[in-house]
Image (cartoon, rainbow, N blue to C red; front, side, top):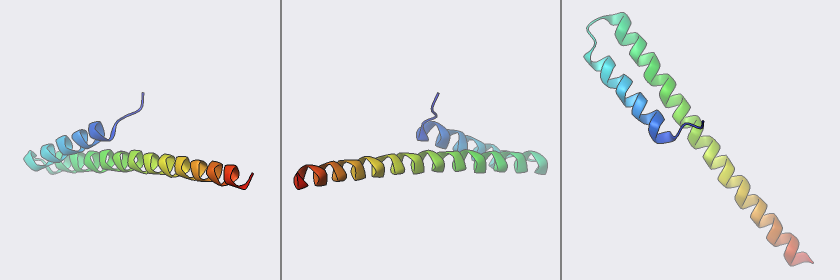
Length: 70
């Protein structure tokens, strides 16, 4: 199952809210680490989507160039 950017950002926001409400430092630190991990995963999802789109555009451009040269 692929995780969506929206899902990952929701989890990051949830962890940030948890960290903001924590009294215990170790629990706050855990929530902040969790937030960082969720945001990192969200950024990876965006990067993969951008790279996939770029690859599609390059493939399309290459096929147009190949078709124009024949």
